[in-house]
Image 1 (cartoon, rainbow, N blue to C red):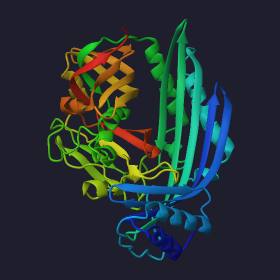
Image 2 (image 1 turned 90 degrees about the vertical axis):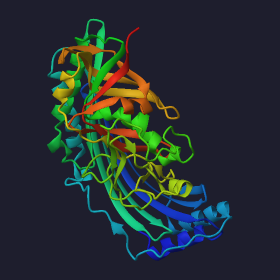
Image 3 (image 1 turned 45 degrees about the vertical axis):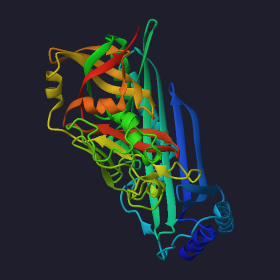
Image 4 (image 1 turned 90 degrees about the horizontal axis):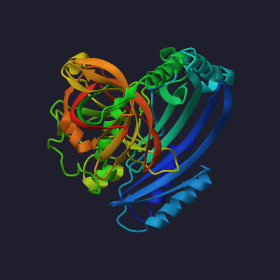
Length: 461
């Protein structure tokens, strides 16, 4: 890799004609994706990318240029081109870089996936497929995907930071289809962590396939869900997708700094029920959204966004710091060198409460229990959302009743925060991919079971 002296010279050249701050991002990544459909390999893709980008921030604006050939000559050209594009403003201070980068030591892979034979990876998909089919003759189709990514980055900034981080991520996703006559229902399950092949010691391929099939079979026998305003319990894990999409993005400086968020200017104000504490934590050991450093060379950290209903912080990147005057807090992320970093969530979750899930269920006479959430849509400006429910049951007399299907949850993120009356103690996380201005990045969503009074449930008309 390049010497610290050379990187320092690039940053110096980038700021030569003005600018408050500069950073340089260099990446090497290896990806493998395997699609398995109906008992056979459908496709295999693998590849390596390498590239670099240089950014200069001036006031509330920035210039970012990148190249796919990170050679010394190309980096010099990038630095000069960025300087020419800025060519205005006072030149910022340039801090000296250390002789060698600070290296990340957490979230390491025990069994690096690159050292595993391709046949063993395909066998994981075969095992998930077989386990799903073993759940019953009604399982008519199984699809499974395997994805691994090893990303190594070097980041240097004009503020004197210089780091090197290695990110190992592995995920297996399975979808099962159950049919009976003309009825057709699907179920899905997955596991993803910042780990190597040892992921399957924690989550066996069989367990992932079985769970996908179980959800499909439950839906096959379910009646359609009732509609209207009901008390709803959203269970742990991927249930946190509603907070992530409807509220989390509205707490990122990307929208807050430009007054494009319903939460702009509300620090210190009550925006949620006092039962709600929400956290973003990029340090969680080996979790899907974790890293040692963000993509602006800051150590990742635990940031309490909402504490007992009070808005205490935003997710602030370096550009957000320039716009808002708040300190950046280790959340600048990007998909690859092709994107400038922006403020992004990592592992975002509602903190555990004092109740059990059973206590929440017992408190409802007639309502809906959402065991597994699906996808949905959100208007980031208003936080209006509509999310499907993958697995749901009626609650009758404080007890779980029959399974129902076709339910969706409709509401406004800023209002659901106020409507969460009770939080259970069964915190769990779910892995997903989050898209925003800086591309698609791995992000965990999480929560314990939460009780929401008066949430609109949509369904079949």
